Length: 201
Image (cartoon, rainbow, N blue to C red):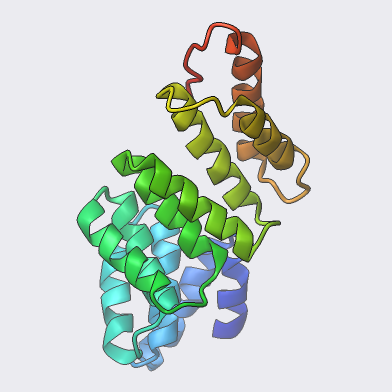
């Protein structure tokens, strides 16, 4: 597997073989900022956040600032609950103007964690404007609407049902998200009359 193939393999979740290949490449070329960045992304995805930060810091040393690197830092800090740093990097990623839906989706998850629900809704709506077919953004919309409903900010039951339908009928929705969405849908049906909270497990 070449380093380019390893980077492409990350999109399918082949983290471990990609990490092995990228590490082999970096042993011969430690100045490849792009390889460091994708190594950091892969480490973050498998839960090795400190190793991710180290790799991303190396990437920053060799790359010009860019939205993808800012997003990678932001996601890693988000997973570590280092919310101040997460906000800095995710907001900086959006400042470039044109960025992928994932940046806005991750910013929405940040706002969800900090309880800024209207900002979370705006961010995930922006993600879906950029890519209305992104299954993870559709699920992020579900999570935001569940929290808005739970806090009784306004009645979003119809919007939530529509978002759940979109997630459940999307062919690219990962199986674990399908399971979660089905659980939410079941609890929404059970609780819609008495306005009880829909608990995400």
